[in-house]
Length: 378
Image (cartoon, rainbow, N blue to C red; front, side, top):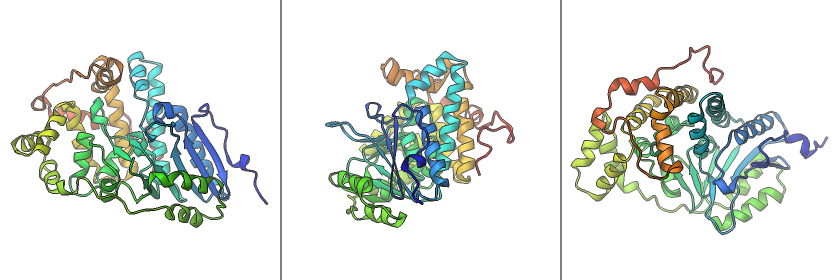
C-alpha cells in the first residue's frame, strides 16, 4: 500500500523555517531561514526533532538529506549556528525568559544526539558556512558533503562560550592537537582540511550542487543505496588541505599541558603563524579558553552522551555561575553583535589570573544524575 507523502511529514511549527518533503524513500529537509544564515531557533530545533523521530520510525523513509536554503547572489550558508541574539536577550531578561534559554540548549543537545544515533543514512549537504550549531546537526551524518564554499568552524570562544553541540566529542577525535587548536581559536577550515581532519567525507563542486539537489528532489529514489549513489555520482576530487603543513606546529603548541604553556610556547616562536595565532587567543576570554581546553581533554574519555551531559552542565554555568551582567558569554555576545564595539571586558582579563577553581566550577553538575535534563541519552 502506498502511503501518502503528507502522512510521512509531521506537523511543523517553525513558520516555514523548516521545510520537509518526501521523494520515494527519501526525506528531504531544508533549513529555510536564509536571511539569518539558517541559524537555529528553538522552533527549528523542535521541528528537526519531530522529523528525525518520525522518519526513524517510518519504514517508508530509508534515507534523509539536509540542506540550507540560499539567497540569490549571496554566499551560501548551511547553518551559522544558534541564535546568539536570543541567548543575550533571554539571559539579560531573566526568568521566565531563561526557561526558554534552558529549553534551547537541552533540546538542541538532544537533537545532536538523535542525529548521531539516527539508524538510517543521513546526508548533510554542508555548502557554505557551517558553524556552531550547524556543526552539531551535520557531524553525526553518515555522509558529510562539502563544496569549495564550505567554511567550517566552532567559533564559540569568540563570544565567551565553548564549542558545544557535541564539540568536545567530535573535535577531540581530530588528529593530534587539531581539536584543541580549532576549539581555542575558532579557526575556520575549508573542505580539504575538513576531510583531512575527519570533519567531512566527500567533495562536490558547488556548480554541481543544483543538479544533485534536483536529482534528489525529482529523480526516482527507490532505496537508501540509490540515494547515496545519487550523491556519489557528483563527487569530485577534494582540494588540498590548507593547514596540513602546520600539523607539527599545531601539535607542538596546542598539545601542551595547559593554557599558560600554550600561550608561552606561541609567544616564544618566531614565525608569523604563531604570532597570528597568539594574537587571536589574546582577544578571547582567558577563563573560557581555559574551560574549553579542559573540556577537550575531558571529552577524549567520554561517550557522546556523556560529553553532551557535561556540555549541558557547562552551558548552564555560562549563564548562571555569575549574574548576567558578569557572564563572559553575555559580555562576549554584547561586544560582538549587540553594541558591536568589539571590546569585550573579560573577567579576569589575563590568562595568569585564571584559577583552577574558576575552571573546575564549570564542570560541577547542578543536577543529580536522576534529575539531569539529558539523563535519557545513552
